[in-house]
Length: 477
Ligand SMILES: C[S@@+](CC[C@H](N)C(=O)[O-])C[C@H]1O[C@@H](n2cnc3c(N)ncnc32)[C@H](O)[C@@H]1O
View 1: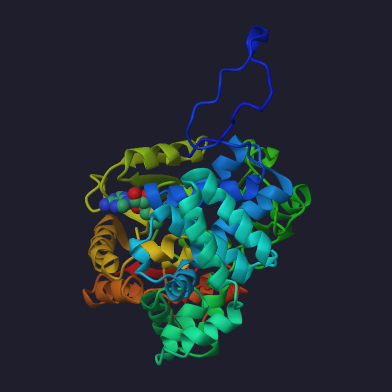
View 2: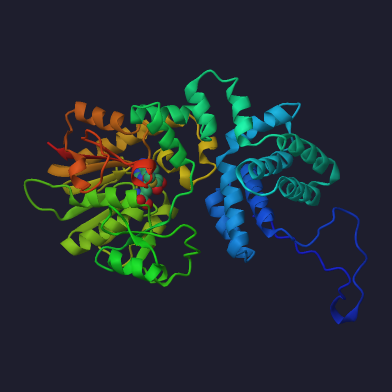
């Protein structure tokens, strides 16, 4: 992470009363007077220069610099908002810069995006949005680039978001591309959502808008260790509407890192959708015999393994957790200490375990298109070509699960994506091979509305307030 600037204070005497050394020539490094924007800008730079993840880099930087309260809230809004809205911000900038945007210096481009976001999507007064952004550029890159950024932002500030959208949309004849622009999504992702919803109108708009909003923080009250009621009372949150183990924190729920229920291991942060699919995997009815050996075939970092492990402990079962990446397997081990879980570092396509499992969860590696609201910059990094590579692996992992499960045992296939190639496409192929019968997964989501015609379950942010998790429950013939 870019270091915090801590220049010597003017007039301050050095140690042992010596006069401070004369200032060297070079860029001036003033003390940070705008910690929120400085933090947002440094994280956006890390995202574009070092492929950092904003949702990991920002909390770390806020902690390092001890930025809290209103400054932390502003830094979060500016970082995540700018990262999510990049497509729209760049479309506006392309109208105001007289050369292709990708030839603009990357520091200037990041600053411009931050400035345009403030101008179009916040209530920050125009002059403050422009001046504060220009100050950041001057500190880091000098007056010439600052002058360029100033000139461009002044052009942007001549119109508000509505006027810019009208101007941009007047040149776009494709309704899906217009909606994608308005809701800050690449068109191919908007199309994938439309295909999964079977809708290109109001519902698609609602889905894309919900995907462009910051999600609430959900907690898992670990089954058998604390109840959702108790956890809600301790954290000031609300019991979740659907998961029996879920709690929703109020927005701006604060920094949870030091929260006792988390440090004591009674609860963990987990989207309610992930909780629901884990419970479905643990409770889908097996036939013809016992229900003691469970397998989590793609376990890292262990969120769902924790739910499986807790429920296995209650019912007297054991869980084998397979993860191909050593560092992620370590996270599973740490998350499941004291649960009846054994972690194996292995390739799930051939993990070298004895067959005969009673139930298996395949939470396959996927595009993550269902969790874009949690990873602000992700939508602009992903490419349509990513999907084809993943579907091959997803099919192979599911085929492996059918080799490992016993007849009458259940295999639950989950991805955090609504893309049909990763969801129904994979399960339908397995069904065609005759590996399994497909059960009606909706029965394992009691009280959850808006689940359509089945047999699969697709959760959605706009319908359920969860990530867009897909869940298919199948039974080996
Ligand atoms: C969607 S994540 C699983 C999330 C996890 N179940 C949880 O709830 O925390 C998919 C995981 O599969 C792992 N993975 C990828 N290829 C694999 C393979 N061939 N065998 C086993 N695990 C694999 C990835 O490293 C990643 O940790």
